[in-house]
Length: 106
Image 1 (cartoon, rainbow, N blue to C red):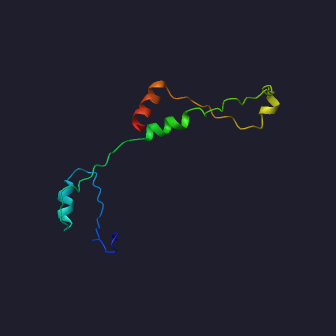
Image 2: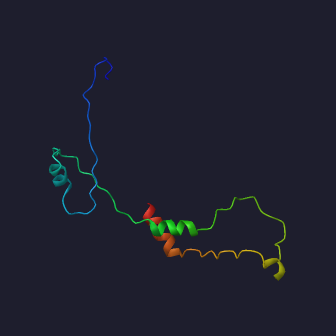
Image 3: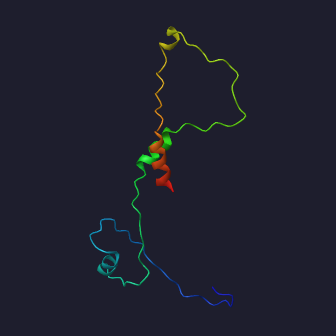
C-alpha cells in the first residue's frame, strides 16, 4: 500500500533450482509453461563443506583467558582404569586443512 492508501500491484514468483546442468534455467522455465523474464537467472553455488565441517569439529575448544585450574592432575592407577571407557583420541587438523576450511567458508 502506498502513502496515499492506494494498493500496489502484487507480484508473485517461483524459485527454481536446477543443478544437473542438462538444460538452462530459461529452457526449464519455458518448458514449465511460464514466461521467461530477463533478470530471472539465479546462480546456486555447489560448495562441498564436508571437509570444512570435519575440520571445525576437530579444532580444540577455545579457552577463556584468565581462567585456569590450580588443582593437580589426577594420576590413575590400573585398578581405577579397569571400569572406565577409553577416551577417544582427538586428532588435530593439519594447518593445510585449516587453511582450506577458511578458504571454503569465506
